[in-house]
Image (cartoon, rainbow, N blue to C red; front, side):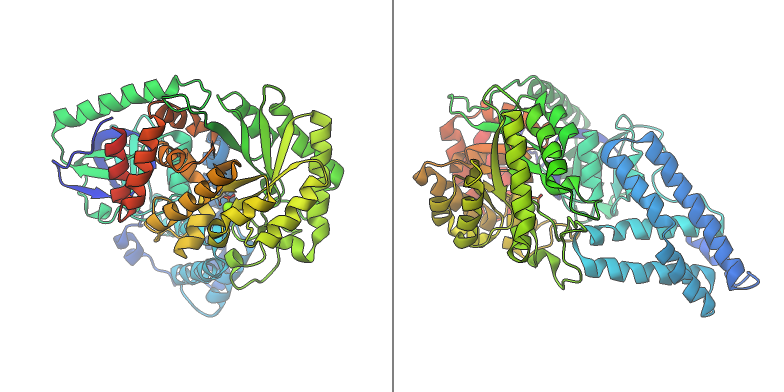
Length: 562
Ligand code: PEP
Ligand code: MG
């Protein structure tokens, strides 16, 4: 494995998409030209209605632009762009702008005030809605550009391959990216779950986010970006940099040829599983070298539903996923509804909670509404019976042993294997007692990190805290894995941590028995694990646990596994 060199001056951030790239910086400043704004006469309209008509025209043009980009994109990128198209034409936003115009404000001031009003509301809602603040500010800039007669700001088509450097990228910027021309992404803000990160993962563009000082990089500075190490070296030795890129290409080619099953270099079996959202993603994941599904996020099928689907309809949806994994000793871990917080489901989520991430989400919804869980379990039972695929069922957001016991009783009454997710630190600390009442545990490192570090997983400014390499998070994972070892029961990881090849080895060294991840991460993780013995993994775990912070933990583990 290639080591991080420190010969060139550099910056560091949170690694999001692995890969090494070397190219000049294209620094994107997402603001409209201040001169054009200064020239604009915002009181030139006859009255508030005339100004509102100008706003409508600009908002429509911005929305049309998003629609065009969405049509040229696919998957997550298309969804993100379609959502932005709707937000640009949002009636509430228009109403806020009209109110400020009628109060006598100039047009640009009214647009700004209207957007800020929405920013406050979205920020207050937290979670996914807070993440949309970047989109709102992007929409304001685009509408402003149309009003003052400038081209929309953001990323144009770069003339040569470049490393895109920005404060934070708006969905419209990331979605239209051509990986042949944008060879890496570096952002000053943004966390591992930001839009930049989501799109970079989809396009497999090496990406580092949360890089302090990124915006001080001068345009055209040669940059060497290592998306696995989270490093951005400025003006490195060109020959050495090209060699690093070459070595990375060779490594990636070797990774792509891994064909399973999951095991260490000395033959210890580790189940490699996929995270899926519905039948379509399950069918696609079934083609990857995986032994089943470690996390089926059932709530993702219901995000746009007003009313609870019937047991029959739910059973059909679950059966589609189970069907994709029939035979061959494969199994599917179905997670019961994790509605609430960043995944609002209209028919289940409570309204107006002060702090939804700490509120009634996941299993907690069944405290007041047990029928919701009972009907879902009935549907899972039917789907398992109709497909014959082995179904395990687990609950999200479990905090006490009593919750786990009650859940397990309901699941076992339907002849299914019962487990709970470890997402709340209390569940990790009491993992040994949880394992007395359930058949398996699955660690959701996304939420476990959020709750351990008291840092919103969607907060773009807290990427250094929402990092599963944080020593406190690693300790809790180690406690949970050790409890599994002692009980002789499976303990998996299904959060984003399992998709990080280096961290995957650390987890196995702690005693984790399965790793579940987005299908795209399966081969890199499987291949990395196949190169390490159990002893290597245990040494990696020890090194990670002993490190003072995430960056030194990554460096220490990289040195152990080199
Ligand atoms: C997690 O929290 O790590 C997890 C897998 O669940 P989700 O990301 O769906 O909250
Ligand atoms: Mg979770």
